[in-house]
Length: 227
Image 1 (cartoon, helix red, strand yellow):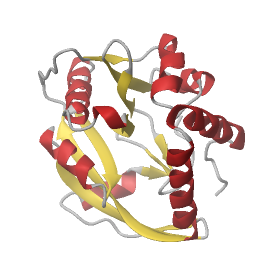
Image 2 (cartoon, one colour; image 1 turned 120 degrees about the vertical axis):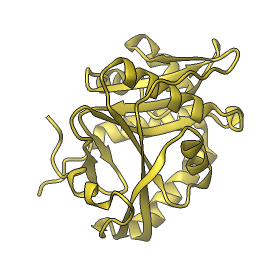
Image 3 (tube, rainbow, N blue to C red; image 1 turned 180 degrees about the vertical axis):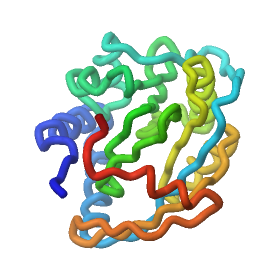
């Protein structure tokens, strides 16, 4: 099948924004890690799930809200994974960005889709079932970590889902990302399945899913963009 990943121009734009926002050291370390992964690596994506039941969480001084095109400059400055133009271009009725705002900075961002999201690790789209949502590309600024911000964001997405007829919410994270595992389970998500993958010079091989809901894994992946 043809490669339907984001365009080279979009990737370059995001890289430039990340460099400006996060600095040379972090970007160089990330580039080195991704280059090593491209040559040879093995890992698993762990998928967690939770019913979108009502939830009420708060952290004094912080606001959880849906981002708008007016947040494009602040997102590029504070989060750094998109330029203002690519950030705005990603927003749609089926792909939303939620942020945690302290009034001065955007401390956290999580993207949520009901259609599907390109997943670099698998070189495929993760497509949630109808009436469900998938959380991806979550990032918390370094100085804000350790404050329970990621669980707070997850609870916010659950509350949004409840208000928008979303039955179930999914989130996936690499197996070795222990802090994210803790944050996700703290928000009441439970492990559904693990999807192993191996990379050899850019080619990805996906193994068989394991876990209590392993049979759900096959319907999650698509090589073509969602409509």
